[in-house]
Image (cartoon, rainbow, N blue to C red; front, side):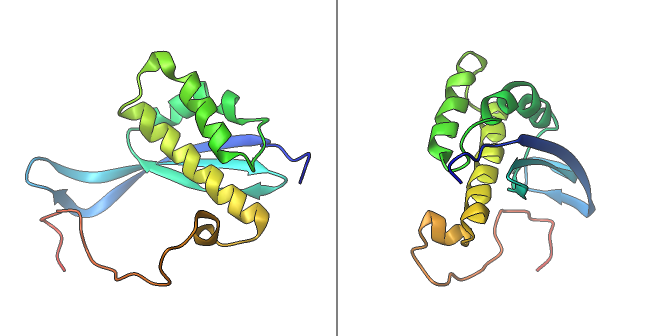
Length: 143
């Protein structure tokens, strides 16, 4: 893996209609937009995503892809730092941070797959299991 580099960064957008509108007391919506960031190295594909505007996909393609492609897929922190440097004049909150987060998650997933270990092991699991519960404040959803 010494000469392995990120070959490309695929990006796609999905607008997913909801079975019924969701609401949180301040806003109601009828679809969710998911932006996928899929870095590829050595024929292996990582998967990262963000819930955000479709503009995140354009930002990833236009601003972040050139930073990511060609880098070492094992150096996720270094690639994250390079992305943060590249966006300095664009502002960090909101759409830009969502875009970086999608790519960063995809890079960690890619690294775990290249190492052939579960992502939780790569990141360092603290527990062997966790309780699952419904959360998020979407008042319109049934149990």
